[in-house]
Image 1: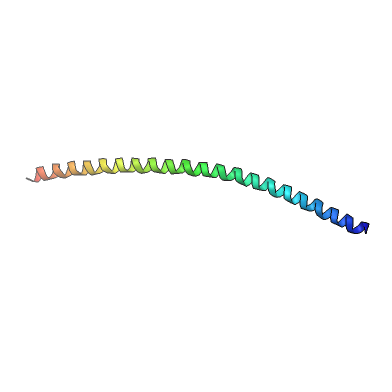
Image 2 (image 1 turned 90 degrees about the horizontal axis):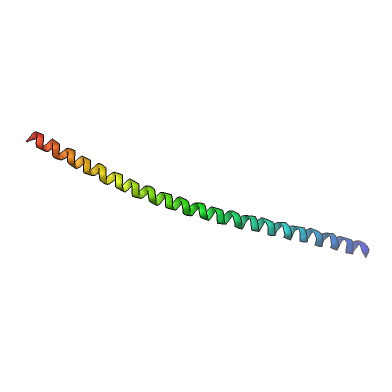
Length: 77
């Protein structure tokens, strides 16, 4: 009978340790998730900024190409 209680006690102790470890891992995973979400938000902001800059550059290049085209047309006339 004592052996069964010892076995039960050992199983309960292992279960308690497993629960503690699982909770610690969960807490760590939640912290990592928060960090990852912040990084994603920062990357999304960076991406949006880069898209705006790309649009500005694209518009400037198009404007310069138009100017060159007008200059070329004037020289041909």
